[in-house]
Image: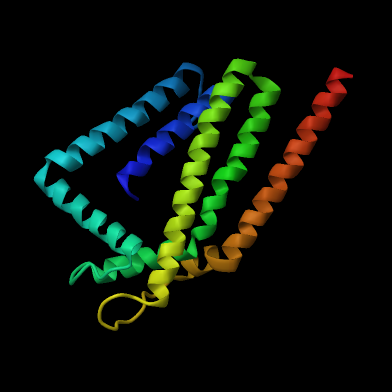
Length: 201
């Protein structure tokens, strides 16, 4: 994953904390500290990747693979197999892009029912913005990966071999998993709304 995507995740966690009072499995002050700590870790990682020679070389090779996938160009010897594996993974798990909207619905429902309106508005806007960016980025990455696998740049070579866990969670089975999650979220939202209506009445 490109580190330009990391601030999107930080924004997501901040919005989650404002919406629900929880983030990274922690609530209250601990949740706020967790969000701040995660953001600091992102900044520290970027500093390390840009200042430490070994980390900079590793980050540069990863960026070269991402750029090759995005532009559909041969990254050269030593990186082709890595690009093939990354494309295989991104294409198979492209359905994961829809987990962000599903989670957004769940957190918005929790925030509307439990949190003050200012926190709901600000947190909802932050999470919605990060959801749009994350979903578009992941879907675009999956599309680039499918194009790569359909016509791999460079010399002919064998496709990566997928393990049983990868095959089980990817493709149509992964899509079915998302459908189940969406159904559960819808049922939970309906149940929460019905319970709130009963309490109000």
